Image (tube, rainbow, N blue to C red):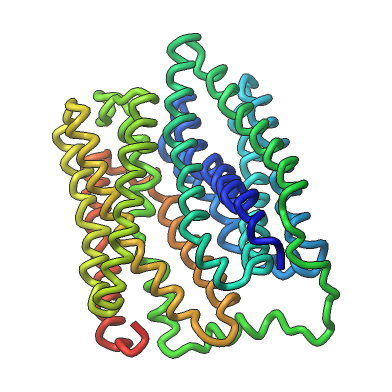
Length: 414
């Protein structure tokens, strides 16, 4: 174990660094491709495919333990992300900007997913359970600060730079150059401040990495579990991809015509504050009532606020405060309702092989975001914004039905 007094030197910065590449790949890329002129179908399809590394990361997570140590993988992935975002910045003025930047984003997605594995492994192995519990709220706070920094600060800056220099591509070059420099600085900083965590582990010939995954699929009611994991966020997976595009799109195309800076303020400050508050209150709600009694209420809290997007698509309000308020409510519901999903994954993963089982759950979670997200752009193009958001609301029905089955058939585990 390490000196606990030094933990403050690396836990906050580690989880701030963990959030940066994830946000760049899965959130900023959506806004970037929109403002340079890609259509919604292409944006949703391409950027949803970036979830694949998080979907399959359980397959290579043992390798980070078998070769080198967690500190090596953390600093290597941070430095690699810095180089990759520099590549994004370099190719933004290129005529083939989409083709080249997609490659860099794709590799950055794998680096970010690997970083998640190593960072969480380092946290678990370097700190005892009491220290882990003490720092968990702080680490989550700094992860969310990275979200504010990306969705709020950098998006607002991109909008301001674009207005000042009348050059959208130059503005985003600056943004990804900032990302690059920050990731490299964090890699250097963590080279000197991170604990080792553990030494390189020898590969055991008797170690069976397949068994934990096999036992997961032998759980009672596994088809119901998988269906619930895949469909719980069916509505939100589609909304998440299209919502920023809708807010940015012109009135003629059915959007709300917000500026990039306004979008940054709504998503990066108003929306994120609502998300955090919803998550905190969701945790308190479950702690008092238990998941079984809370599940239906929380899944409705997650999905019913999507009606506000349907309302905005039909009315196209131009009052910034009204739009911000509706986004606030939707994000609050998302944070509140998503807490139940997290607790459910932890409960069905409890017991032997809990780490591997939780990794499988997160893989299904990624699939539940990726697959609907990939088709969301096509559906929006086909239906238009009005009917698309009505469709999103209707997509809540399967998850509610499955939640009722879980509540009635598996109450013992919930």
